[in-house]
Length: 210
Image (cartoon, rainbow, N blue to C red):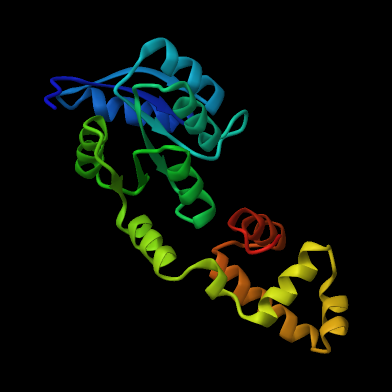
């Protein structure tokens, strides 16, 4: 597929980021920024109206996140390819975005030449993943969720999902509170989350908890 000029829509809730990306692409030959949006809802509307080749999509935005926007664009059969450009590379961000239909996933610390190359690849329909995201996905495939958590970690997670405090978990499982905290640390690490709520949400989404 030979594309002379690749058209883009930039989606980010930070005006400085949008300005920076617009300036970067407009200073390079072969790119044209058609418009900008500050949230996922605006991204869907703008993409429908402007029909760009590529949408550069942030994920976590007030007023409408990127994953929902990607899913809606996919549902509508939008021609545009979505390239996620974000600071987040956790499983809770990368997997839903890719499952929703994103063509690629890059982190904001990517060098500009890598970003240009990724946009060109996305416009051609090729998948582009940052090395960190690619290795994370490979690790997920090689280590299914149901093999990641030990039996005791699952027991702790079930109790956490019920809203049980660390103290009551310790009493119920006949272990110390310190041991509960250790199990939680391991659970957070294996699920790539940072708190109890995220651990429970991720576990339900992946089918670890019924």
